[in-house]
Length: 181
View 1 (cartoon, rainbow, N blue to C red):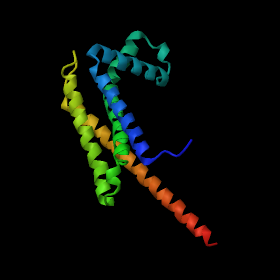
View 2: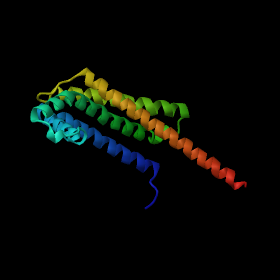
View 3: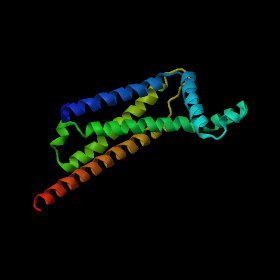
View 4: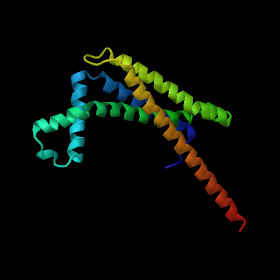
């Protein structure tokens, strides 16, 4: 199999990013009961794997534990799905062909600002969308959680890219040093 071109990688990342955004939209389109059942089921599975003697607890004890962690778990879900979106957006923007020809400072600015703006707008539109879903609400707190997750994802993606670039430069410099020995 041949090497993938920069343009092909851009298109692939764009498609994956759009699919991820569709998944977020799908989660947001679930009514309150379905959304609650999904997160409760996932939380129960996670707790059964992490809480010692989960099976030995009574139904009331398990229910109390689930109730205690449910809101935090849901908010962590928001944060995580937008962290992934931030990584995808930053990775995609970094490969926009027109940006490649710009100066290093312009690229860095756009690699951070453009994905952040896209994530903020998507988080706000996602919350607005939920306002029209039965039993769901539109909360500024969730926009802030989503945007915070996206910013973390953008920072992770940028840090990984910088690290990879430094590593490639070190390898290249090391290869050049060995050619003179």
